[in-house]
Image (cartoon, rainbow, N blue to C red; front, top):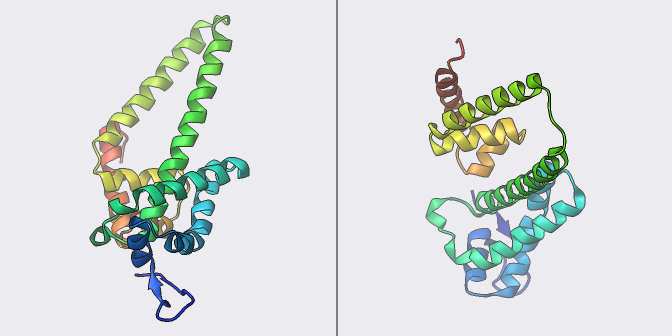
Length: 194
């Protein structure tokens, strides 16, 4: 499914995103301007859904579009459409920002809590919670990449089946099947009753 972008001028209308990205890879700034216009809105929307902070979202969206400019030559048309490729970059960059912010908050919490001596029950609860998280991480690593990405987008980022399919560039039926299979494998790995 190619997205056509109308370009003014003789013989320049109806270029699709793949052609624009090919030109961007060659350093064509005009093509990048048109590609930017076509993808900036969806990129910002996706990033904003993940970050929920307008200022950070705009900053990350700009970083994503700069990365598209720098890495356009790495895009391979035979591996999928341009929009899901760009949105995957956006999602990964937004998740990286969330993780970075979480790591900073965790460091601050540890520094503030260094003088606090928690009660025994609180320590036991933290250990149990940490062990459960590690078990979930271990079980997630046992899934296929498509299962893991589908479940992560749906359950951690709140995406619908159509949105997951669009970001990953696969049919919606494939996403549903992979998610079902992944949930079954997680249930079995975690020892949860079926």
